[in-house]
Amino acid sequence: MRHSKFFIAMCAYLACGLLANTYAQAPPPNQAADQARMDNSANNVATSQQQLRQLDTYINTARSFNRKDIKEAPTKEEVIKRADELISAIKVSCSLSDAQLVGLSTETKNNAVYQTSSYEVACTNGMGYFLTSFDRLKKAGAKPGPAQAANVEATTCMSADAVHDTAIAKGEVSDFFCQLPDNGGGDLKGMGERLLAAAGVNCTVSQFKWFGVKQESKIEVTEAACSNGTGYLLQTALPGGTATPTAMDCVEASRKGLDCKMTPVMKRPTLATFKDYLATTDTKCKIDNYDQVRVIGQESIKQRYVIEFRCSEQPNGLVAYIPLEGNSNPFEAIDCIAAKKRGMSCKLTTVN
Figure 1 (spheres, rainbow, N blue to C red):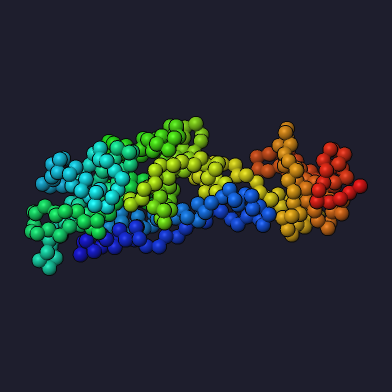
Figure 2 (tube, one colour):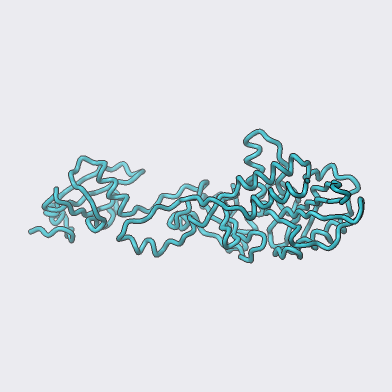
């Protein structure tokens, strides 16, 4: 039956297990301070595009989204009223600014008539959704009864856009994207600007792409790239969630293990960064523990990091000048005696 297939697909999106993307690696033992500034965002953000693809495939196969070909369509007033009923039934935070019936199909099975109805809705808070309900009718042509939460599902415009982009990239046909004028008319950048503004961020959005979900907290994450070169991860409520829009810039997101895809961010180096760099040089100094590494500082002109190392191969200690990616200045290594002449004091190795 059509409705059973539909809700299996919906279940795949909304309820089935999601695999979390791993963006962050475990920090060295003595980086507790850095870890304290991190939350578990990276492990909580999951990718659900595969589940959404199952839904989109069914919708297109069943020709459920046929907004241009719906016959005997209800009036605008009736559409608004029914969409409001669906919103109330599943308690989505949305005061309607517009609604359109985008899919309508019926089928008869075992002398029972079933109707699947899909709506695109735009909300005054800047959000937009697809709402789909499955109803058993008293008879063919009858109007559905009161909306039941168990028979209604919602998908955000951002999630739908991710599915649409994936389908188009594969040369497939997909009508699963928000097209109402209040939802951007097919371009979600305006929606992104409104939601970022609600989060206190002024951003002229140049790109706006779905990023992932935090399923347990019912939060959707979308990445926005701004025309001034900055970028943000925008968090909004998934259907059934209550979170208000919040935004995290890509620099802070990187510190928490979430890497923006459209806004490059130079990652803050860690003790592991310097340990690994030293291992690529000809300098003999084996580092087993992170208490053998100390950050002295960074040069003001050459911008090399000045790092002290302690190892058995260097009895007089080691101070290295490390140029990270993008720095063309040379690597340099001296012992603590030479470092003292340059005004630096080693703390990991005692020298006269």
